[in-house]
Picture (spheres, rainbow, N blue to C red):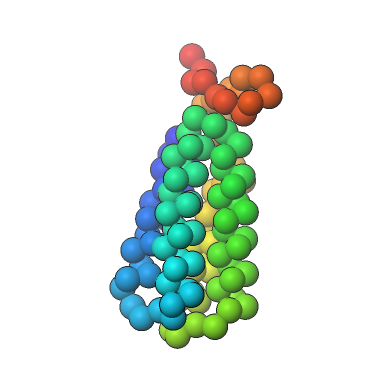
Length: 111
């Protein structure tokens, strides 16, 4: 659960940092939408173990869109790439305290 909370915090940080310094319109929207999506899927990842894989895909999108797109500040490049890498790494670590139930990806606490 701590891993999903960490991704939730990273997603929230990403959304908030879009407002801390100037962003271009597209990169602002991208940071807010991806940040809120990461936070949402981090929460879902607590119960639905496979939801963390959506965060891995969002992290790849964040890094690629930041690295290849136009940007106003170098801080945006660094922030988004660091957050993207951290979210990706954390998202690849499975929940250790849950056990999948059937093919739905739904998970129940063990013990």
